[in-house]
Length: 84
Image (cartoon, rainbow, N blue to C red; front, side):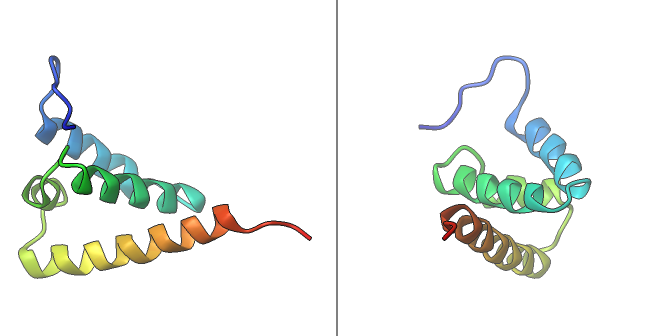
């Protein structure tokens, strides 16, 4: 179910997310990648809102989304890993 916001628009939040993602390192990148893809999947944000927040054209955005998916997959693999 999409968020209903009172104090910020989805576009403003997407821009804030972009700034956070830009400054992320290590596991944070994977976590944020997964979170963003989940927000697109659940309808909170549209591809267009995210693309505009990242200031990308369609081709650049498709490449970014592929990289986000790869990072999210690696993040999930680390979380699923167990010790011996």
